[in-house]
Structure formats: structure tokens, C-alpha cells
Amino acid sequence: MRIHCLQHVPFEDAANIALWAQRRGFSLTHGLMGEAPLPAHRDYDFLAIMGGPMNIYEHDRFPWLVEEKAFIRQAIDAGKIILGVCLGAQLISDVLGGPVTRNPHREIGWFPVRRTEAARRSPLAAWPDEVLAFHWHGDTFAIAPGARLLASSDACRHQAFLWGDRVVGLQFHIEYSRDSIERMIAHCSDELQPGPFVQSADALIPSDTMLARTTSLLENLLDALTQRQSP
Image (cartoon, rainbow, N blue to C red):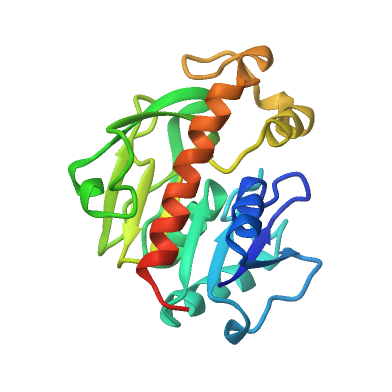
């Protein structure tokens, strides 16, 4: 299995996806949008699209967003396995016809996510009905035509979706390590403004148990996606 990771900023990388790939004996390449060329679609099987602080419609500031969206559309049409996280999920949704808008609340911190009934017949099938996940977002995606809503939270109704049987979008982060969260605090602390779903910087740092649980969710999801498909 050949995995390629699209990054939007250096501090949001593949994190624990890279560790999972290493343990499974899969190859992982990555490129920073705007700096590295996009790969040929024949050169990867699984596309991981990471988060970033930009809005998906900021084409003037980040002109490579147009190229990235076209690339994602081609990857979908080519039948690739695709996982988008946060900004990555929003990009996928936009490409599929699900608009991205400002969420009623900024959601930053550790908050419960609840599965929908549809998630029981998805790559999230083995997850508990409620999980504690890390969030850092102000926008939200709509559920695109043909996609199924898989999870919701109190602050954000659309937390996860499945399109077809191999394209998954997650608004929340289960790929983050402790280092990932510390880098987010270092680079994006200006977003920690008071709100009903914004925790303090100290509260964002997870315990070992919290990280172990989210890493288990990540590995379960990635195993489900890769075992359901042939390279």
C-alpha cells in the first residue's frame, strides 16, 4: 500500500498516520502544497489530506487550492482510498458538492463525537457510539450529494462523512500526537478566544490514555479502509 500525504502547513503533518503506515509496512510520501509537485495518480493508492489554518475558498491567498481541488477530484474519479482531516475533509466535501461554511461555534478542544446509525455500516463500524476527540476548527462542511453523515458533536452537526466506500472525511483529529497539539498551540494560539466550545491551552494537552484511545480509533479506521480495498 502506497500512501501519499498532502500537507498545507509544515506543522500539520501525517503524525500518527505515519506511525501506522510504518507498522503495517506501507510506504508514505508527502508534499507541502505550494512547494512540492503533486504526484501522478498511478504512484499512490491512498491519499491522506491533512488540516491547515486556511479557508478552502481563499484562492487569492493560496492559489494552489484550485490545483489541489482538481487533484482531489481526479483521485476520487480514479477510485483511490482517501481520508481527509479537518481542512482536508472540507476540501473533499467542496469537490463533491457539499459547501463549506462558518460553523455556528468555533470548536477547539476535547469534545465527544457521536456516531450516527449509518456509521454502523461504514469504516467506523467498530468504533464506540461515542468517542472523545480533539477538535480545532471554525468552518464546517455540508454533507455532499451521495455522502452519508457518520458522526456529530454538540458544537458541530457534521463531523464525519463517507462517500462511496473509500472516501472518508473527518472534521476532528484522531491522527494528532501530543507534539501535533503542542505545535497547534504554538502556531494558532490566537484562535483560543473565549467561547462555549473553546478550551484553554492547558486543557488541550492530552493524557497518555486519551492519546492511546484516539490512536486506536485512527488505526481501526485506517485498517478498515485498507482491508476493504485492493491496491
